[in-house]
Amino acid sequence: MNFVSIIMGSKSDYEVIKNCIDTMESFGVRYEVIISSAHRSPKRTKDYIIEAEKKGAKVFIAAAGMAAHLAGAVAANTTKPVIGVPMKGGAMDGMDAMLSTVQMPSGMPVATVALGKAGAINASYLAMQILSLTDKELAIKLKEDRIVKEKNIQNDSKEIEVLL
Ligand code: RP5
Image (cartoon, rainbow, N blue to C red; front, side):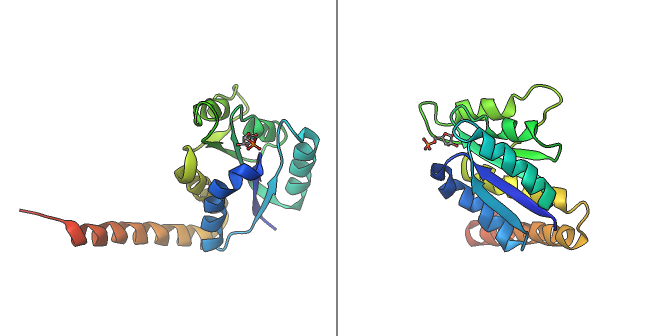
C-alpha cells in the first residue's frame, strides 16, 4: 500500500502542515502523519521511518523549524525521496530552518520547498508528482488540477481586467 509519510518536529508545526494534509486529502492520496523530533525523540524518529518504509511509504515529508535537522535525519535513514519543509518562527523567522534544511551534504538529498503555507502545499504536490510516476490515475488528476488553475487565473482576471 503506497502512501506519503508526513513527519513534523513539533505540535506547533501542525497549523501550517495541515495545508499539506488537506491538499493530499483533496486528491484522495493516502498518508500517515506523526509528530517526531530529530532532537527530542531521535529513536522514535528512526524507528518510525523504518516501520513506515516496511508499510509502504514511498515519499517522506519532514517539516521542522529553527535548527531543523529533521529532514536530514529522515534522509539519513531512508533512500526514499525526502521533501523538507522549513518552518517559519524563532529568532530568525525561518531563515535558520531554511538553510538547515536545504544545505545537505552531497549524497544525502533533501528536496527543500518554500517557507510557510506555500511550502507545505508544494510539499504535498511534489510528493504526489513522485507517486504519479507509477500511478496513472493520480497523474491525470494532477494534469486536471493544472487546467483548473489556469481557468481560475482567467476567471480572476475577467473580474478586474482592464485592456485597451
Ligand atoms: C522544531 O523546533 C519544531 O519543528 C518547531 O518548528 C520548532 C519549535 O518547536 P516548539 O518549541 O514549538 O515545540 O524542532
